[in-house]
Length: 401
Image 1 (tube, one colour):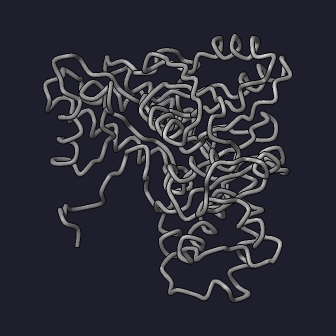
Image 2 (image 1 turned 180 degrees about the horizontal axis):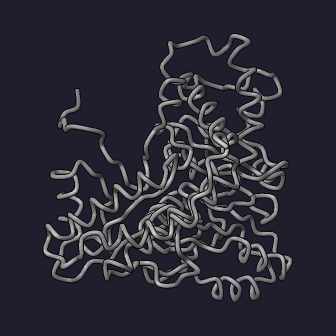
């Protein structure tokens, strides 16, 4: 029984954790197993190969770590860098801020490039820093691909272009927690050295697996990196990979079966179709926001996110009240505004195993909530705008043709 029960299904539209499909829930509904038996290593071997596909890498080495995205951050940093190393990191919202805090606490020399919240990373500043760094003192570029606090997506291809144009050897370390498996992400093509994601986002699993994929260059860097690490040490994983047992410590058996089911769902739909579906959901949400007469926190179209939309409210409305009313009256969960945008925005998450009709239900709920809190919205306006777009863009379901 839920602590606060309500009739019908709960409508979860925060940008993670997300809805878990019934197929994944059923796959995880199983007893424990001996992870040293032949079955779990055999499944793990295939999982590792299949995980590479959603990162679009053939050269990368994946690690499935029992942790959150925060642990995956730490694994990426401590395995490739040494205390005192200079890194350039972009502050564009709450989650990039938290990552920078971690970088500083791990004793790296962090060169912070800050943008106004709602804007993307200042890549012109990056180019200036790279151009002037002939001594190659910058050891890594750390960037959040998709900042969920503000709904901003950064251009990773441009970052790689800058590094290559100056032949700079800095590692490119990317937080893809709310982007990988939902937005276009090309690890090999964009020369990403370490990429991370979390199971509770686009994979539509419970929290508990931090997925880290390292390029050959990053694996080589890990051999000389002097940062202290124990639980997150890639060396321990690589040792057990060579032994064919794969696990240096106990994994969550249930989450591994869930990951298998999640990947099967993605491959059945087709990764490119998954990305296209997220683009439809993102576009439909933005059209609804425009029809309501509200503004997107993201200031330019080039930065729009297809996994989360941060909606600015008028100054006479507290966006936290929008989120409270959603939960208390409509059994709908929306994302709060965080830190600098607290009280100013609410966030609609549209990622994971989610379809268009589910989104329309959320948008209808948001309209009623806006009316509840005193905003003069025309009921049906956003739903109509989103529906008109979706009616012209939703493809037939491939498995039902």
